[in-house]
Length: 234
Image 1: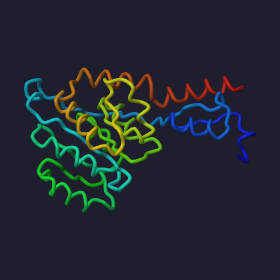
Image 2 (image 1 turned 60 degrees about the vertical axis):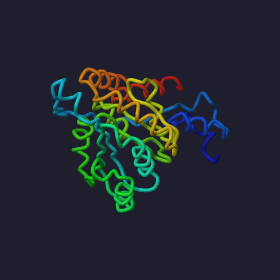
Image 3 (image 1 turned 180 degrees about the vertical axis):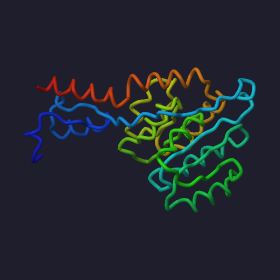
Image 4 (image 1 turned 135 degrees about the horizontal axis):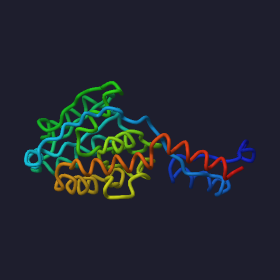
């Protein structure tokens, strides 16, 4: 309110943020939806197995982030508990105050043997791990954005994202993944079931996702978009 009248324009991260600022008096045509544009993976070294082996291997799900209450990893576990008979594995990369709680929850739900905790890894290794999996899950109760979604898509890995994450704006095409209702075990379980039934992600689909990401969410695209905004408002 103090400085708004002096601003030429405002970059709002995600659609929800744009709506928030407009409702508080900022001019609609001076508030632009924006996003995160993260560094591009340069050497993924993805190992593709032959088609027959891929059919028999479990679908590999992955979570990358802090093991804290806001990320709602417990909702992932509860959802997967409904799918114990399916052919899947879940890997978690990250540390946090909820690790012990989540390890106990996995055991209580009978998932201990199919969920693997890796702890924190260097950021330089994130892309390689994302590229080896079939779906990234971001289940946050709230995330202003969630840049790991960008990283997964840039690696050609589909995503399953809570609608309370700004990065859910990116998932408007089933090829890229899907969005579920934040906190809903039923909805997340149904979406996970559909992903598992589809099976492993093909090299062709990964390539299509990577191509989409390069044309849509690369740093270069973000820079061009910002220049267009500057030209428009001036």
